[in-house]
Length: 168
Length: 363
Ligand code: SF4
Ligand code: SF4
Ligand code: SF4
Image 1 (spheres, protein in one colour):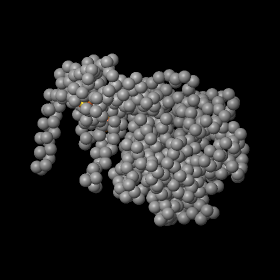
Image 2: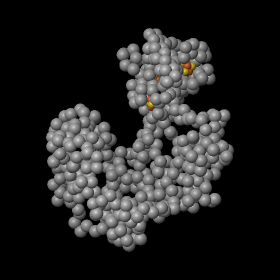
Image 3: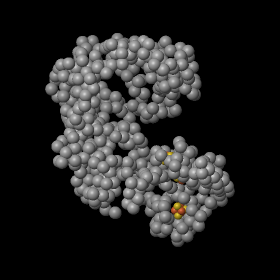
Image 4: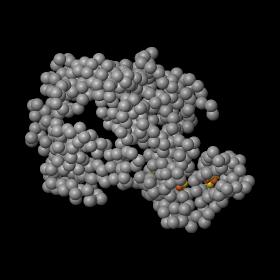
């Protein structure tokens, strides 16, 4: 079943709980120079949109279709699993950073051992019937990981709601 | 009263006063505060330690004290250094704890019990999730053991947390054992539903019993200090001027740090690893400052160098700088003299400063 990560930007409040849950789940120690897999931020409007609204977001690997990182890796560390998550086996990683250069979201990180580490969509948790750690902890329900089917259905429902609201 | 029902919490705090008890620290500097609050006003402590007036202070036992949140933190630090004996409890070995003769490691709230009341008449008895790790201990337990060892004439304190809770809640109808066993908050028994303005029937807790605009308490206690019983507008202590054009807000908070408590915890710290000052987009543009640039905040009291974070959350002409960074202590830019004469509270949000760009960020 194909799983899709989604962030409802109207609900996210940039509390950072998802980023902390991810560090906990993956034993990431930023004080030892390790880079977290998920980042939360408040983004200023672009200079062209002066006075525009702020955007809050939580950003991790997007588990892209046709993921450019997979194609970029010369030794085939990255691949898709049966849930369409972009997972990896870094035993052959040569630390060339090609995946990071290909990734539009800055998802791959590197550690002292020179190897690449990234969000694997909490594939192990999901295989065992649990939701990803970041999704589980999100207090506002902004961050979700759903099957493609339910994702599309929710999206349709949201569009219909919007149309109805606008026509009131 | 926080849950909407009466406990003996306030009475409990006043149950025992030390023998030979003199004026509380700060009571003479802030008589209105002293008339309303049964605590010392810690802002007066550095001066009292350094001058010995109105009486000398030689020792201190502090729970989670952080000198960096006090204005003119260097003065506070200097005062701590003058004590003959200083004991500090903390979760972390903070810069304040490092000055102590004895540091007692307190456990986190996950490792201890705690009772809390909530609006709407609810009470929850939180039980520990794990036993305290390493040598750390529940701070209430440390206090109890110290009281016992020092043979304090204080049956409640020597009896420990549970004994104190039973005492404080004795007239509430709660069974503490039942509370402890309940995984959810428990509603207080026999609670009367809220009636608007009911408190006016018994009168307000003011000398006149009325809702006072002219405060009797200030009139009586603040007379010597020339405090006004009627509301009065005071100018900010250091109004932004040509020399110090920015309003400095040092009383702002990073939610994930819980004031300054979790600055040293690596996961929440990772969300905002550097000491950064938030400035407005307009000021940043005017001064040619971008995210990550090194900037210096300075005024007549001191200066600190931090990274800049231009953000749409801050108004033009303001700087938000957060407390508690050892490497960029904003309290150095605040004066211990600039306090509210009524409450003694520091002017965290009415100081001013200037900004200078030090170095562009390397990227
Ligand atoms: S690492 Fe980057 S490119 Fe690869 S799937 Fe994740 S977001 Fe897409
Ligand atoms: S899915 Fe798992 S690894 Fe990926 S960001 Fe969420 S918690 Fe981290
Ligand atoms: S936990 Fe949810 S609300 Fe909080 S930052 Fe993450 S996505 Fe946003």
